[in-house]
Image (cartoon, rainbow, N blue to C red):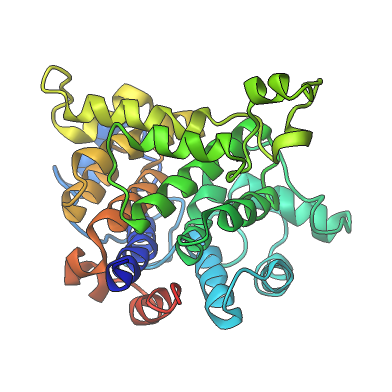
Length: 354
């Protein structure tokens, strides 16, 4: 086993996610691409300041959004505790984020607060609910984004890691479909860190792990064969309702490599799959860019950002996918040098794989 290579790819996935978050900070949520081009020029090629009145106004080029800051706190927790400690992470959220919010969209560290975190604030601060009963039904990807840290830490223990990933995502998002797709994304990141190629065979390898009950996805056919199929087969076979999220990325990868399937320039993938925040729009676009530019980190994240819309999440997820394939050693230094907390992030990311 190439331990050094695994460490490099684990660090690459995590650092790549933070870079994607910061790249999206300035031009976040432009659904009018002509307006974005007028404000930022024909091609965004690095970190940018948010404009006046925009979602992250007051922050500077290279800063992290609130999602990035929460992910950084998870990274600090995992590194310091040498593993995922849910209580420690939850305490950090309580003390360093929720107590500094008022429930409004523009409150707390990092500027704009996503709906799932506003709902978390209401559940914890206003209603006093215990952790584990705090999630909401937002169909967005912030759970998948931060759980990349756990995917990296447990890349060599995929069964344990997948269950921890699902639990962490469930702190803020409880829709079974969203949890399933989000967990599947992180499971794929873990596989890429281990050195599995992002190819047509990846889906079959991961599906076989479901069949062996090594990943926490329900398998209805197996449940029926074992005579345990009822209205909720997930009770017998895992936390998540379907393994399909492990399968469709290989089809997207096939499209990205098929010369008869053309998306040019690649940033227009946002127009193909959709520019909104929903996981059904963001994830497929990230998989496409992660497959097409699997060893070219710069092109992958810049095309993600230049597609407009929810480009922050698209770039964060793409950055993790390509970082998990190319490794930290192949991420251009300028992205790390311009990243707020960049040195700390790199140092912590390098400690994740024992």
